[in-house]
Length: 103
Image (cartoon, rainbow, N blue to C red; front, side, top):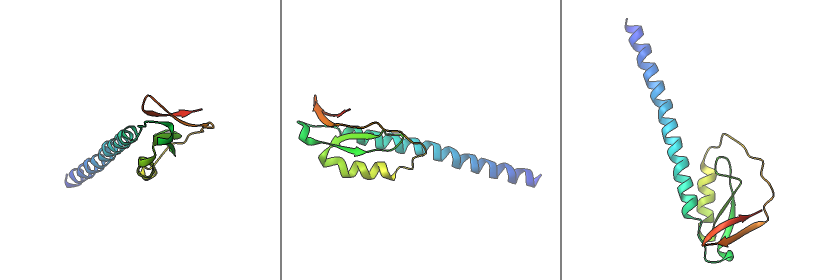
């Protein structure tokens, strides 16, 4: 009987850890996506630059020059478990105060 309780307790702990990783992993991704969106602003094209992304955030991330280093650090700190094949990018431009990719 004691072994069954011990096994059940171990199982509950393992499931709790797995659920925690799933919840906090999703939260980290959502937080990074919010930061990317907040960093995407401009007044003219010279305000914009491109940060090379990784899955699941996209191949190229158009952001304001002042936020590029921070966004690059956030994206590279995320442990990616997928991959992209990216098409060639011609550049980035400012449209309606948002940096937009130009393919």
